[in-house]
Length: 490
Ligand code: BES
Ligand code: ZN
Ligand code: ZN
Image 1 (cartoon, rainbow, N blue to C red):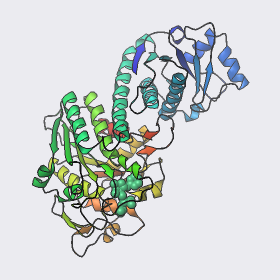
Image 2 (image 1 turned 90 degrees about the vertical axis):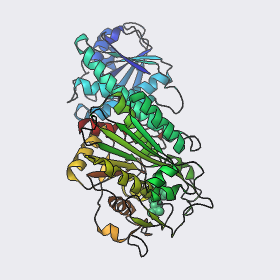
Image 3 (image 1 turned 60 degrees about the vertical axis):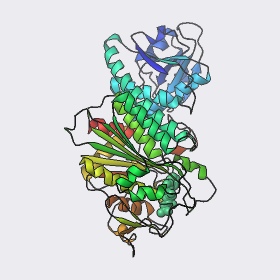
């Protein structure tokens, strides 16, 4: 779907449907709603006064007026009470309105930036949230969105500002769409090699430097932990590095690391059969990092950014790594395997060690790492956020707040490491205990970092079973918007 800002009154838009907002308060908002109300001889105000328009967030009431407007359909969308109005409300409302427009068969839809000038939403934020919500709400796996054109009605003096906000929002949406698409693809398609192909494409499109390491490359780099996981995999593992450097090496980079387990069977410590298919989404961290790189490339973000994606399946065959094996990670740390299902931290151990060579300003990793974080925070509520640096943690929390990609702080105390003491190696890869697993995993990872670092455990945020606002069913694309917000403000 293309979004086209147009300096034209919404009442004059010759489209299949127009969208106007109402608030829970009695008075109608000014701007587009007011203009449409006037063109319809006060109909919208009368319906609202009678209680016939549901003003709850994302509630849509369709009207089919026969005169007064160029468009045959009006979708009145609720924004809730003015006191609660923010960018998140606008994203949800835009998604709901555009999905209803699609259901009514509309191909071209008109809207003025929702919420602009109401509450503290400025024009750019309202425009961005409207376009983001609309695009992301219309997303369907392997299908066109169904609406071809979103016409944004703006005042002439705002046209340039609208174009900038649209360019930004479209870049963000494209990144999220890429992440959702990769996670939704079946695991026999979205293989490590496939992720490497995507990385090469991104490199071509945006001028990134790209390195894709195979088994031999990983062995040269001493990545025994990553290779241990990959040992039983039929698909070739790929260690993917993308670099966006508009600073010509002048700046210490921000590094994004994403867990790329394209299917997690558990390995020899095999998972149960129930719901194992959801483990195709164990590369959601990788997908978020690749999605964010797409957005940052499109925006030509003026920051040096390195993306590191260790990608492999976790499978089992005669060569598979086993419980009691001892692996040596790239930084020399030896790891006793307790569970081959605690594989994500092994990939990340080598990826986080590899990141050290960049002397990064900060590193953020995203990983569907533990079931325990889902037990702690719930499904689809928040990612677990672990940090060794308070200033970086505050930046990530601010980005999470702004994007409504929520994170919640969990502890990284050294006591968690005591459960990982091994008799035969520096560390065990699992405590073998049923409790506290998210923090134990994070404490394991901390052994491989020597820079400001945040770890986001996004298990429970990668897939969702029903549509919620602009977050569609299936892959959520969680993390892309948060990463982009962080990088572009860091
Ligand atoms: N990929 C899983 C974690 C996961 C669970 C992601 C649920 C998404 C939803 C991870 O590799 C895993 O299996 N973790 C184990 C660790 C344990 C063996 C220490 C877990 O959480 O049970
Ligand atoms: Zn696992
Ligand atoms: Zn896993």
